[in-house]
Structure formats: structure tokens, C-alpha cells
Amino acid sequence: MKKIHYREWGIDSPRYWGLLAVLAAIVAIGGFATLFMEHEGHWVTGMTNQIVWGTPHVFAIFLIVAASGALNVASIGSVFGQKMYKPLARLSGLMAITLLVGGLIVLVLDLGQPSRLIVAMTTYNFKSIFAWNIYLYVGFIAIVAVYLFTMMERKANDYSKGVGVLAFVWRLALTTGTGSIFGFLVARQGYDAAIMAPMFIIMSFAYGLALYLLVLMFTFNTDSRPLGDKLIRRLKNLLGVFVAAIFYFTVVYHLTNLYGTENHAYEAFILRDGGVYTWTFWIGWVLLGMIAPMGILFHPALGMQRGAITIAALLVVLGGLSAIYVIVIGGQAFPMSMFPGYTVVESGYYDGVNGMARHYSPSLPEFLLGLGGFALALLVTFIGVRIMQFLPSSLSDDVTDPHHAS
Image 1 (cartoon, rainbow, N blue to C red):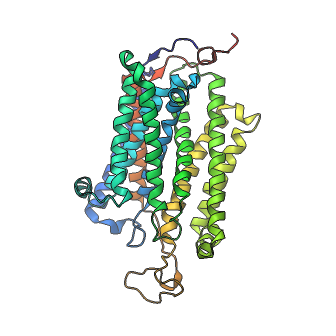
Image 2 (spheres, one colour; image 1 turned 90 degrees about the horizontal axis):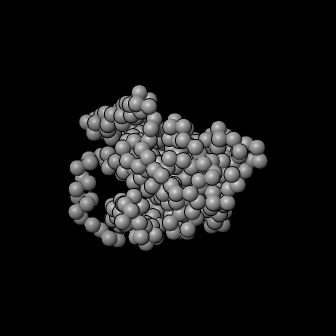
Image 3 (cartoon, rainbow, N blue to C red; image 1 turned 120 degrees about the vertical axis):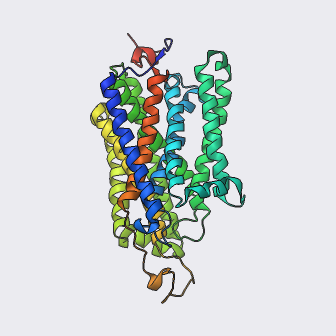
């Protein structure tokens, strides 16, 4: 492999400032949406006493999971010694931080009273996975920042692999913690499953890589930098394998649920009778999020076209949001089993009266807040690559592949 040189993103100034202006406007709109919900109260959202995690949580969890997966590209290079991935590591680390920050901002602003964050950060209940997650998130940002320093400072390069191993282990713990929020939550029939943690880990691999691939292709195309077919082919194959793994875990999760009689009602709700949740599962999560991308990425002709690869990556992102929506909101909409074997006929809190699912309609402010988190992550990423040397000057085949025949 030839020596890799890095330089700042060289997109022309009018396009760069125009892009930042659009993203900043979306962030600002998300901020106004937050102020509106803060001022009016949560009654303007679709959330209720039964569905307490709404659409902003879907965006936040997706970004947090994707942040962990975005670091995977760097880990493959430094931890597993795959030389072709090493030039991609700096952007991988940057996106890991920006995506996590975007997700956490949405999460904090969706607390209802963000000032309560001080209580959450100073009063810990270590029996709760939420308390552990605060350490996991903050620790992840700190470790990846040090990891980036060891990659970008020549005198610290010798420590890069060691810090990379620590970052890899930490990211696995982080995603395990996120998946365990649902895996440990026994009150909801759709959660309370040990498979949630490993399923979230494989989800993070795919969603993080899809976003990484989109940003990599966009920044290189707009700056007219060489981006070799061999590297793109390897990344898209990896993405296809990760999506196939999600498909496997999804099948196993539902088959396992169907084995237990106690889960039959929940499975019928998600797979057949759940209305919008059933449609989101089959159309969004399964068809658009897994089958269509795999069909594109593994197709002998389509899989070689960059336009098709871009569409596949976008579908993986859309499918990821659908998957999180079904898991988070569909899991809450299904009525809790307050008294197993009995039907609740009346409740002042409307908890599953007559076995009916709770209604939830996402409101515009919720959607805008979530979209603002996405825009913030991209905004910081594009500022970072503009002012610092995160991007290689070239990723052509003769640069990244030591066996390339010139």
C-alpha cells in the first residue's frame, strides 16, 4: 500500500456554505420544535402515560446505535489488521463521535424537562441500565477522541492499536447496554428478550456502515477525489453481510417468541393485526430495510453501480428507523399484561383496557426534533472534515490495494 496523505475537504466555498446553511436551518427548526414542546408541554406530542418514548427516541436510539457501528470501519483496520481499511479510520472515528452527540442531544431534549439531566448525572441507581449507559456514552466519546489523536499525531501512532482495541471493546459494551434497555425491561411483552443485545450490536454494524458509506461517497464525489472500485466493492459486500445478519437475528427473535405461548398475542400484534406497526414491520423493516438492499448489494450488475449502492445504503437507514420504530413504539403500544389471565375492564390510566393497544400518532415537533439530531451530526461532521485532515487525498485502487496491477 502506498503512503496515505490526508487533506481537508476541498469542496468549493459556495456549495460548502450552502450545505452548512441548510443543515443549520434544520437544526434550528429542531431547536424551535423543542422549545415549542417545552413551553406547551408534552400534550402537543403523540406521547401518553403508556407510550412515553416517542419518535424522538426512535431517532436518538438509531443515531446512538449507528455511532457505535460507524467506528467499526476503524476497528477493522487497527484491531483486525486489514490495511485497506486503515485510511478510512479517521473519518470513522469522527462520525462515531458526531452521530453519538446528535443522538444524545435528541435524547436529552426529549426528557420533557432537560434540566432534569443534572439529576440523572448526579444521582445514580446502578441497578438500572440507564445509569450505566451514561458512563458508556461519555466514556465512548473520550476513548474515541484519544483514538483519533493517536491516529493523527505521528508521535502517538504506536499507541493507536492498543487504544483501538479498547475502543472496539467499549463500543461492544455500549451497544450491549443500549440493547439491554429493552432486553432487561420485563414489563413489556415485546422486550424482555436476551437476544436484544446481540441484535442491536449487529444492527449497529449495518446502520453505522450505511451512514459511513454515504458520507464517504458524498465527500469524495463533491471534492473530485479518486475512490476506487475495489474499496467500494468491499464496503458494500460488508454492508450486505451485516444486513443478512440482521435478517437472521430478526427471524430468530420472532421464532423464539412464537415458541412461547405467552408471546403469541404480541407476535400476532406485530406480524398480523397491529395496523401501522405491522405495515412498518413488513414494508419498512423487512422489505425496504433488508430484502431490497440485499437484492441490490448482492446482484452481479446492480451491486457494481454506485448509484444502486447509494440507494441500498439509504434503504438500510430507512429500514433501521423502521426497525427501531417497531421495537420502541410498537413494544409500548401493545398492552401490558397487568393481571395475566384476566382482562382489565376499567382503569384510570387506560392501561390495556379490554386488551386494546394504545394509540400513538407522531406529531410534527417530535419528527422535527429527531431530524434536527440527524442534521446536527452531519453538520459537525462536515465542519470537521473541512477544517481538519480526516479525509485521504486519494482512495484509488492503486493506493489502497497492495496487490493492484497498475
